[in-house]
Length: 438
Ligand code: FCX
Image (cartoon, rainbow, N blue to C red):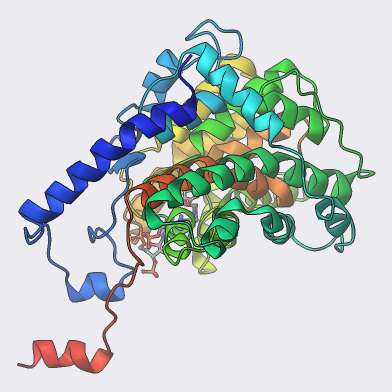
């Protein structure tokens, strides 16, 4: 079979040449303007970043290398080996994101073996994680654990040894594969330490997601399938989201992939980004306990009442809205379909479905929100909860394991294409005033 490394090596020269041609022949072609609103408003829609691995359409949602989520589910290799029968293997999506090609089952399995072979943590990482206070947020612990594993970075060693720029991507790929391989054990150690007795049991006869579930302490095959879906859909969401952008920005300084992705994790830990998935469960639990205490039924009417309380208190409804999307997130839809297939009678799923029926109307009436529909974080928690994974403070860590695959696939191409240090121009308020008062 053609290995991942061989597949990439065959692509790099042509991609480099194409990009050089685009720059040389069309470098001064204008692709947009920037308004004062955009300058002040978080650069929404400003086109100023190159991203190979995925693209987001405001209406349709994400495409991974041109494929929608249902298309990925139809063509990517699964655990059973029968394409379309079950959720894609995370390894098959990783291959797709890196190479733009749909792997064979054999190729996906070879990547599983490679990741397992790279999964051993440096000896100091687990003792360090064991020494952290249990009340430290799991995302902080994840970031610390990954930073600690950076001692093994091949990229930073190669740079210090003075390797030429055209070889950076080879060393970056070494680290990228190792970071993805090592994150599950770091994440599982945190979970087992914070909520259990700290023991982590591996099963390397399984795929990446299945082994991760065993390390977390779960052995239900249906939960393995959920993990495969979960890890696939959270990988990538084009380049401008905070975790992907932070990884790309830090990496542009030639910080190695360990340090770059730690930057991404710290961005993911914010409540407007990845932390929203824990906030959704918190919101639902608060709603339930309030109405249980008052002896009220949780239904469309009481949910509406609780939503207005949240909004009137000046807080956001977690799991709703998006900076780019203007329709229901297809990552929400595929999780809803998973629930309809695997856990249709789950009471919390029914509750989330009722929220889905009323919330867009409430947010439209509220009038501020550009997108009143649910995003990925609105559904993930209830699925985990169904399988007994109720420690919602931890949920963003799962997002963090997955996002590495997308952000670091792009980081490979950043180095292969020789993209430069990122350095946009900032301006002062006085300068902005000078522009309108001319
Ligand atoms: N509930 C209440 N108000 C909301 C809202 C929500 N779910 N979403 C947006 N708004 C408000 C904004 O706070 C803003 O108010 P302001 O003018 O007083 O500052 C106004 O509506 C306009 O914001 P909008 O243009 O719609 O949204 P932004 O692009 O600024 O922000 C996020 C997008 C996702 C940050 C925003 O919708 C939000 O805070 N949602 C809740 C948190 C969440 O679910 N985040 C996860 C997003 C994503 F899927 C992920 O990264 O994981």
